[in-house]
Amino acid sequence: VGGPYEGRVKPEKVAYVAKRLLDMGCYEVSLGDTIGIGTPGTVAKMLDAVLKDLPANVVAVHFHDTYGQALANLLTAIQMGVSIADASVSGLGGCPYAEGASGNVATEDVVYMMYGLGIE
Figure 1 (cartoon, rainbow, N blue to C red):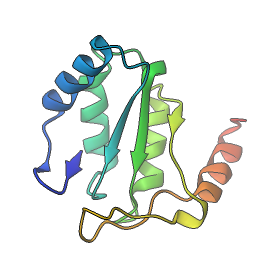
Figure 2 (figure 1 turned 180 degrees about the vertical axis):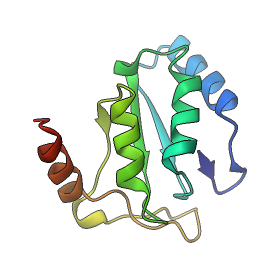
Figure 3 (figure 1 turned 30 degrees about the vertical axis):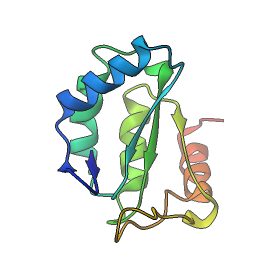
Figure 4 (figure 1 turned 180 degrees about the horizontal axis):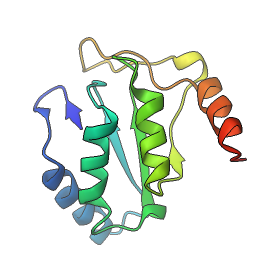
């Protein structure tokens, strides 16, 4: 969705690179919102583009919580068929090369949301 060098990244560019990685032999492609600027709308657009070329079972997501959108972004990804996601205890983390990027989506928040959705 966004990175420290390019800012916002076009969904088509993400899809192109993801497809290339899969074609080169990667068994999983993790899509990260490195600086945490994604929203459910931008995540949906990105995944729409990516899932045209890749099956959801090889796509993972990694959301930073800079603007408090990580859990909502994850829910969007789940609703679109993605079932692999990174999380960190208490939302620890950040990104050493992305100034201002906060921690990742908190594992305990993900577990609580999954429980509420009936997902084990």
